[in-house]
Image (cartoon, rainbow, N blue to C red; front, side):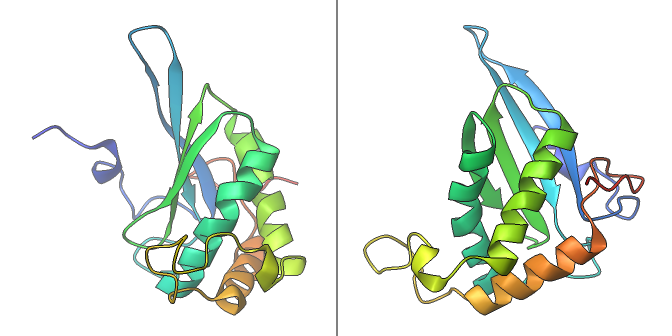
Length: 158
């Protein structure tokens, strides 16, 4: 079985919240795809409840596309500590951290339920499992800690 980079990361050494570039892969035609670790809470110390994480996921899907070019996908980790962000091309971790911070600020202080996309039975595979209240509270907590553009030392972005 192929080794997965995320499973070789020493989760006891990272200092969340942070943005980390996991890899940049080049396709056969030269196209580059970057994979980022958007770690919102400290691994093995906390986990975002599924309803809040699910709502954050739906909101980040649009908000990060508004802030970064080439966003392909933003998907939650099964451990509920953050997200994979996949983009065409590569952005600096500082730019991604600033975009994430801006998106979380919007979630925490400006988003209303009517703004959350994909919350109907037709548009979501688990439409009952959402919580905007939880998404807002977790966003505020993450913002209060600051988002670092480095995983092993705290270098909080403005």
